[in-house]
Image 1 (tube, rainbow, N blue to C red):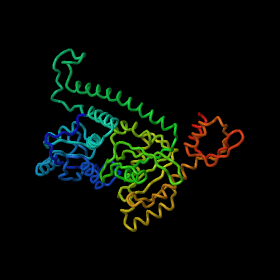
Image 2 (image 1 turned 90 degrees about the vertical axis):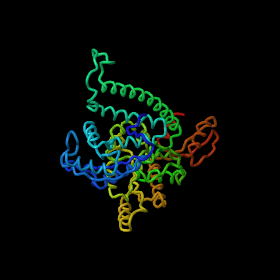
Image 3 (image 1 turned 180 degrees about the vertical axis):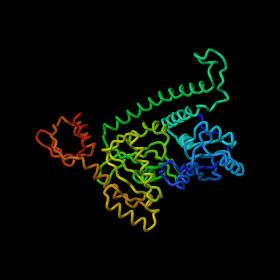
Image 4 (image 1 turned 60 degrees about the vertical axis):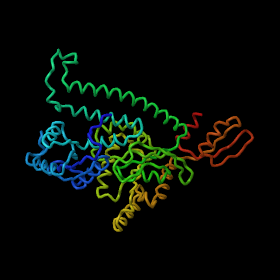
Length: 428
């Protein structure tokens, strides 16, 4: 895929991060926290060196340039002195604003959406992940064509209604992008069908699915590794994990589950990515239990939690699916904060204070997961004849048999199973 950000040299690109502080817009996060997150996003992209960052007050948005004339001149001098090649603006920038700022400052401009797409395109590892990022990037680039090519808007002749020589450059680019989008969607349809086959295969052995969700860098992958023994990439950076990972886990009482680690969420997640990654997050939509992992040591933990809940709603997660809050990174809390968090968690049966690093609280979390998944289980006695060997083998394979007694005509089996397992048995 053609990257949004391209540099001629292989060396580091000096970048400057700007967070526009729009006073008349209801803010969900403090500006300093927002700027810190934007810098972390920049650090997550290889090849960038953050030369500086700042909050720029923006009492009124200028339609053509975003910032006022005086502020543009002031920033131009600062950027020139720091030898900056790329400016990252933590917020939406229209195509016209981008073009005008690039002309004024003589640098490349990326807005928040463009930066997140760059990170995703760098991290995608699986074929499906690459396709989904490319689809999102093309959808984003299509919106950037509007009035971004004024030097090419004049017709080159021809009748105009058949395209070709009579097209403007913007129309030709838009048509090329549309063709690419159609091609990628067809390729994605094939991968979706493959994933549906895998899901159908798992349904024949209906283990409960437990999905980890949370804000990026909340420690989901570290917790996933501790619970499953997997070796998923763990790094103190935003979007260290992109492609979802699934592993089988045996709970303390012997119940086997499938645990899924997903891509981290972030505030103001580009709509293109929400749509593109809906398919990847289907395991969350079909989960029996969701563990919402939070970085409880982060100053804006509550705001991040609201963002995660909002994205889950946008994705269409069933409200009936039980959700447990995992307050992770308790090892980073100061003594007073740790005591307060512990007291709150003790009063709420849906909150668990943990540390993926030290393992504190993990055993209690697993006990709660077991209890919730077992809550829908029932114990019954089943009579099978000697000829029902297949059904008997299936029950033992599911590890739901508590006791077996042989009779004159066959076997009496005492089983404890969930509704999904019972439904599968009845179809045998």
